[in-house]
Amino acid sequence: MNPSAPNAAQALWELVHEGPRLGFGPLSLSPKLQGIELRHALDDQAADGSLGSVDRAGLRALAQSDALGRFRPNKAAPNLVRGWRHQVADAAALESALDDLLPGGLTDWHALRTGSASPVAWQDFVDRQTGMYRQVPSLDEPQAEQVARAGCHPKCCLRRRFWTIRARGPEAPAGKTIVPCLEPCALVLELARREQKASVSEERSQLILNQGELTLLDQLFDRAIDAPDRALREGDLSEPLNPRRVLLLREKLLPWLPMRE
Ligand code: SF4
Image 1 (tube, rainbow, N blue to C red):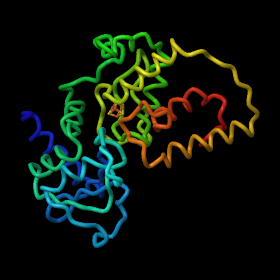
Image 2 (image 1 turned 60 degrees about the vertical axis):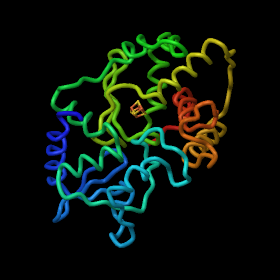
Image 3 (image 1 turned 90 degrees about the vertical axis):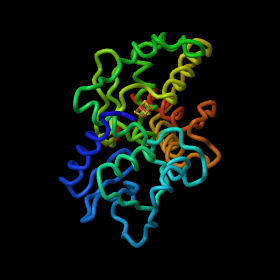
Image 4 (image 1 turned 120 degrees about the vertical axis):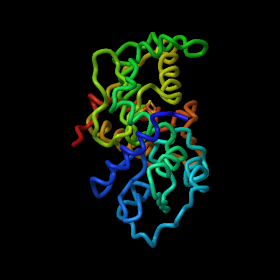
């Protein structure tokens, strides 16, 4: 058991009671007369009666799969099942619930704010990799930045990336929550491995498109990212239409795509 966890849970308990609600990864935490209620952040405005009550024993299973039954390798992804709520009566129960719904989230949040842990630097992290990941360090800085922006995009993950690439700072907070990410996860490392491999083994082409075609391409990106094929699994990065791979391609073309708000 992490010895800092009771302190962390108590600190979060107090923070939640300061406001009407707090986004924490894919969760919304809101103070109630008898404690704190957890639900999916997208169910923030849902009437209590429209949500099913989930007890402590049901939380772990809830976090394992998305609404289509596909395994969720990243518990901070927005693809958490909706339509439920769970109430906790004290900080210890909050800690237990978060252990099941978002493992490591509470510990990382507390560690960053108390200074007891620091985010890693990308280069230090990849320099330690061996085996199939031993070539990842050869990605240059812009490539690594593109991988990070695509892999950690708010459509894929609601932790805020604090690990950094060279002198670039943490990820912007927009679209993210107070749950920090202190080191690259396996999904991002795999995306980086594929990118490094493709960059040295595949020929480059030049492409000239007009504005209308670029707008169409941007719309196709949106469709592939927002409504991916139901057969796709989040962790299967061998699939070209995996949203993280589509986001990475989009990152590379961003300078030419229509400006967004
Ligand atoms: S590395 Fe990125 S995608 Fe993975 S947990 Fe951290 S912020 Fe999320």
